[in-house]
Image 1 (spheres, rainbow, N blue to C red):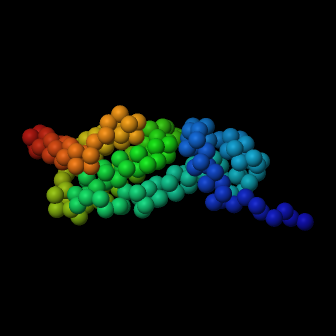
Image 2 (image 1 turned 120 degrees about the horizontal axis):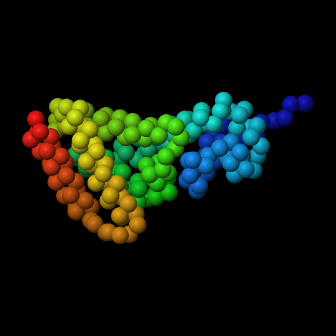
Image 3 (image 1 turned 90 degrees about the vertical axis):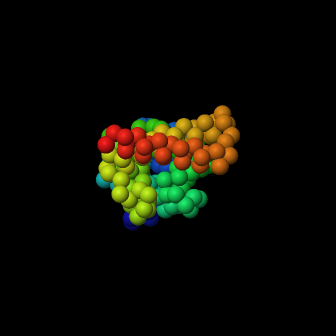
Length: 188
């Protein structure tokens, strides 16, 4: 008689997310995850061809949630400032997951977080009159500049090193955006 399936793909993905948040993405192996879940590796390979496929699906699922539940919140009328504030809020509200996604390497395809961030950034600014006419070089500079500043704020706020008001963060971001855009204009 065939055994009833008790471990499903969703269970594995949920456990894998908890695993990488508690430990690290680099420790996510079939043996490590099965030990964490207190199961054999067989259910993992019944649902996923290999660990690379599991990791791809895991990070795709996390990125999808981030895009739809975190980065699309409307907190400011400027889409760049809005994205930065959402990024900072995410880091402060979910420091372990933030660290896992943005500060640790996760597999051979570590560029996926960069691509994910660029695609969100590009999508959010494409229809805004202030940013829609920027060149690729300007977009890359603006993304890099605001990402560096946002990551700095996120880390310093999450560690309780600084306690800026939302107004102070927004003022700093506005100045940074203007500086990056002016720098790119003067290069032209």
